[in-house]
Length: 115
Length: 118
Image (cartoon, rainbow over all chains, first blue to last red; front, side):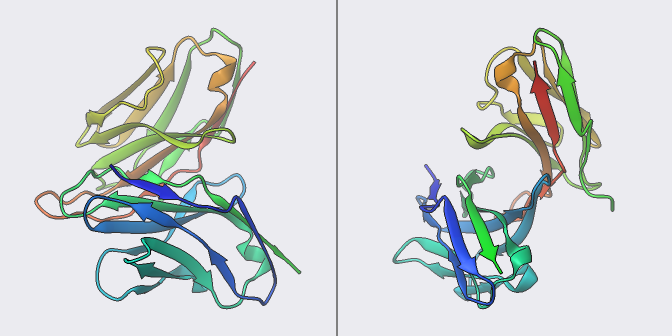
């Protein structure tokens, strides 16, 4: 079975400060991990993914995420937050190596960046 | 490409009426997903098609819900009869799954249909 947890319903940061949105996962084998962003009244939009290789993954809009196998985490980060980054962020996991093609999504974390 | 297209964008109906939501996936994609999003339950997978065939429909709430994919470029999600608790935003997403390998492609989501059942 696969599962993902986003322990924070909401994260608030000031513009210009670094931001972190947390995600932990559980799979039987190797994970494929994804981050998506949802702006108001829009569908989810892909940001980045980890499949294999370098633990630090870079994605769209200056976001990056760090895969930590020992802590089973895949936290989303950005060095300097923008007000326009305010949105709902979803972490998703699926088991690689022939596992289910259907990803499991977290509950989402609302990121609020204030001026 | 125009991305995943969903229609209508908004639907308001009365309890007991039939509702049909439509989705056109990205051309060339062979996997299609229907999701439902609510504040209470978050994002729920309803059904997954691959090559137009339903692979996993375990998320379909009950017999009032049905989904079809008659060809690679069109899918419908039907609710009959609709109930107020069906009010939600319904998303369609598509991706390209490579068979015979560990496919890891991301999903592309449509803009959603906001359904309100009175």
